[in-house]
Every structure is written in structure tokens, then in C-alpha cells.
Image 1 (cartoon, rainbow, N blue to C red):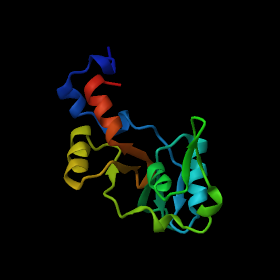
Image 2 (tube, rainbow, N blue to C red; image 1 turned 135 degrees about the vertical axis):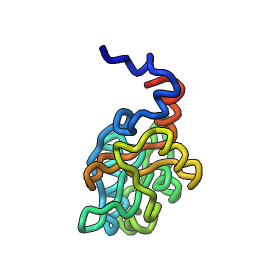
Image 3 (tube, rainbow, N blue to C red; image 1 turned 45 degrees about the vertical axis):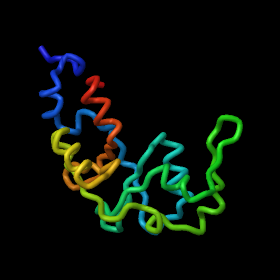
Length: 150
């Protein structure tokens, strides 16, 4: 009989493959795509991060919703975040993304991912499976899993 995640000890959670806690998402953008495309995909798919690939589908970066909003074109009005997308057509993803981030396999254990993120001062990492983008993992997901098993 399998244990439920909330019944797994902290020690066992640390050894859990990251694939168990990531939200699989194969949506990517390319380095030369406009920022407006990346932001639109993030909003449509409810993503905090999106992986950036080159023409050979290799991960070359990662970009966050926060990075886009920090460009200064985001604002909150009446409780809703909004962004002036027209300005983003002038910028490309590679001008804003974190370039050449470490990449983790979907089979990398949670503890190793957390240690890498701490050592490199990162908030998110691309996750690949069989050389293809499987999604991303952020530090909040790891903390939530370690603390609650969710």
C-alpha cells in the first residue's frame, strides 16, 4: 500500500524525485520571442516561470513573471495585475531572461535541487526529462513540499 504524501517523513521527502512535485508544463518560449508572447503564455497557463529554448529545443534560460513586471510596465488597478503589453513587443525574451541556468532532471531528488538553488542563489530551475523540457520548479514549491508534503 502506497503512503500518501502527507504521511511521508521529512527524511523521505528530501529523497523524493522532483518529478513528484513539479507541475508538468512543456510550454516554452524562444530567446528571440517578444516579451509579450512570454507574458501572454504565463497568464494563459497560470505560470510563474517559463523555460526558454533555442532552435534545437535546448534550455538556454528561464524567465519569471516578476522579471517581466519589474520592467516597469506592470501596474495594479482595482485589485487586478495588468501589464502594458505593447511595450513588450520592443523587447525580446533573451534581454530579460536568466541565461544558462543550471538544469535538473526530473529524477533529481528534492534535497539536491534545494541545495543547488541555495548555493547558486536561485528561485527557480528548469526541469528536463529525457532531454526535453518537463517544466520548472521554484523554491516555494520545494518549501511547501518539505514542510507539508503537498
